[in-house]
Image (cartoon, rainbow, N blue to C red; front, side, top):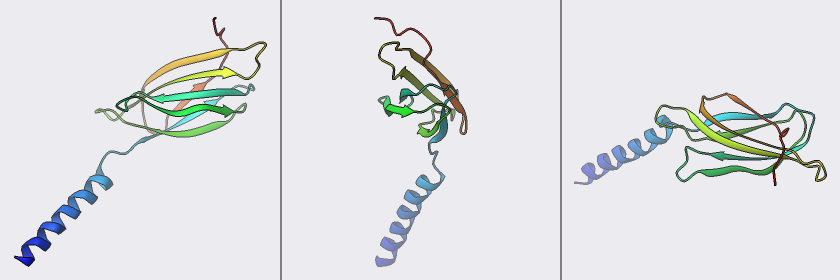
Length: 118
């Protein structure tokens, strides 16, 4: 009976370790500010259930990059949305986009060059 418990425990431990090692992990996506303007960026992982904020008002200097990890969907692709605003309060500009069908290693370019509206 003791041998049976050890074998069962070994199978359970193997199963748990194999799902974490061989299971589908997150996708690494690079967020890139390709402008000279410093911006505040917020990024949401839309595949997470519920959607999760993975950057919140992150300062990105001009030409800076940040790597984030997003959840893959059933086809293995990521989906995120982003918003960006400039730091200048007198001449504030904004930007936002929805980016589906992302693959591991993709780069998403963020910017704030549109009117923010009222």
